[in-house]
Length: 82
Image (cartoon, rainbow, N blue to C red; front, side, top):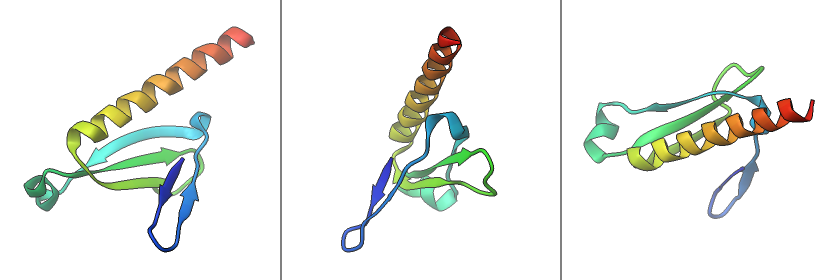
């Protein structure tokens, strides 16, 4: 679930089982400022469904790992239930 905005708020949610891959991107300017973007791609979309800009690389990597671990744990639970 991603919430953004100060005056106009928007909220976007992506189910864990729809996430295809997650990547970090940073250009040369972002590297100069020590920030990066976290992109979350889902099944059936042409581009990134959720983009989180301006994260420190360590925070972005921690979020990526946490999401991947949560997805893996969900898949194991689904297999055990079947």
